[in-house]
Image: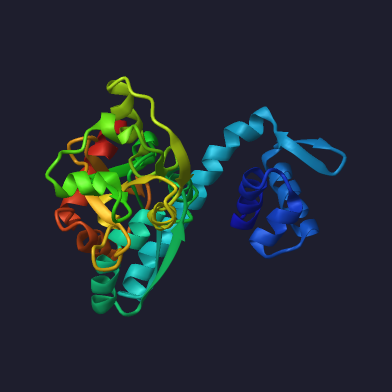
Length: 316
């Protein structure tokens, strides 16, 4: 039994049993993948896949039981490699960060700047996606850190740590009725906001659930005219007059967004919590802890290790 056999088995399940895609992912040939899988089955004395001729259709019952064991072995092999690199290549390596657009665009740049200054030999590799995709990248070992507002806490395999709280703001073009009212000192209400078409985030992104919950609790219907995954797109369409924008407050920059006016909305919608996540069983290299502290100073290495130890004790 070898790791290439285990990787072939795992990737077959991940790639929907498409051996061509498995071969591409593992940088080998399709016959080579088939051979590795057959050799693993022969050694285990089990049929791991349901087949139709040469095609794989799914996992057998034994295959479903073997899969988590294989995944655990491959994760531990990766942990061993990283532990070795910590000693052999201290301060060098790659840090893979998965984040939503809002986090990558607005929250992460100061931390990245400071981290690069102190760790010039660490390559930063960013992967952007929805909160669900961020979580999946962590679960599959394709990212070391995940940063998002929603979804991360839904996965028990992930250790999630609070980073910072933030609020939403309302954006309108200059001269909009809501901008005039705000300039006159009128406090924005949900009832008033609901009279205009809304441009905001897709469901599951950047605190959208708190926006929906606020209108629902007030018994108000609201017209969402356009949804997007990131604030830059939302701001573009608000500038075009297609609706009133609701975005993360951090996404508005008065000097840059000269064609927009921001109206305080913290009293309308519940606060949001950005979380940082790592796999509970992942080995974290020294510079990973350093980046965590750079991004969220209260999350010192001692705090993170304490949280990991507590969760490990709870699962024993």
